[in-house]
Length: 327
Image (cartoon, rainbow, N blue to C red; front, side, top):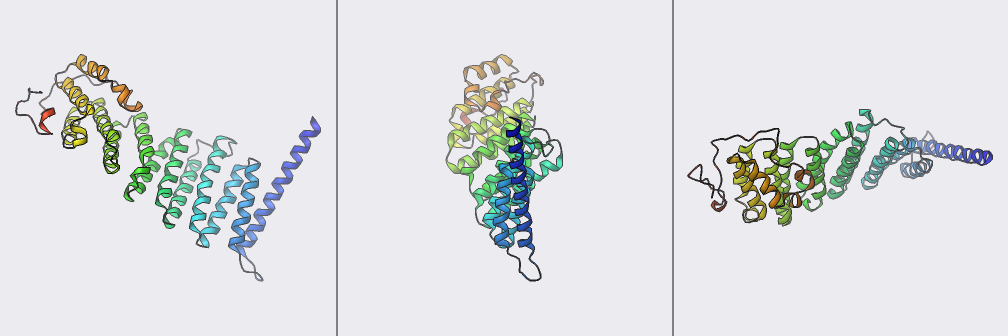
């Protein structure tokens, strides 16, 4: 048994040595010399081979460093799509260096920034090669990886999700943005950023309108109202409800009725009415999990009376004349 272990270690050491020799060979090709011009295409191929060898040995830090040089060589020769794919792979390799082999420290902001930088470089290269869908998706993919790492990674993932959504929505690729919207909404709720979650839901609803995804659009509007009520902001919930009632897809929906009844319960300071609406209108079944967990009313915000105008269901978003007439 001991002999077998020695043989395995010897082979691994030999393979690592071979991989490092490939890196040196690639470096020489990338630099050139007095007697030989640099050959970046050859260098990129050799760096790639070295990266694969390091990866097979689970030396992920060496693997992503070799892959990064491969990407840089491709960039210099204007092979930006190949560079993008290599940077994309750097994200995965660096994440494995954190989660599997612990070569990088998950609590080190530099490690988290490294993944983010690789994703940003991949996104830029995809954009240069006119692949905007992949440009946005690689940012969202890195965001999911960082979110799973927790801590500093979770904080960084928010900005990556937002950048991914910017890229996809600005290029009319909302069809590919749904997962990123949902992931960021869930993350916002998890971190207690409910106002930001509500605003994001409205943005998601606008994207759904462009995709003619009315069922999701209606849920997004309901989610926004739930989020505002959860943080005790009834006025913003009412104003949002009035705006949403201008949209046909929402005005005649079950989600609209639920919103109305929840707002009425708050208006009348009736916790029982709110709880009954939540239960009998099957809100936990209709809403996404991150919002269905926010069982209204929130005990942290006692129900209060107010002089806010209530929007009637039949009024298409118009204010009622009588402050107490909610029918």
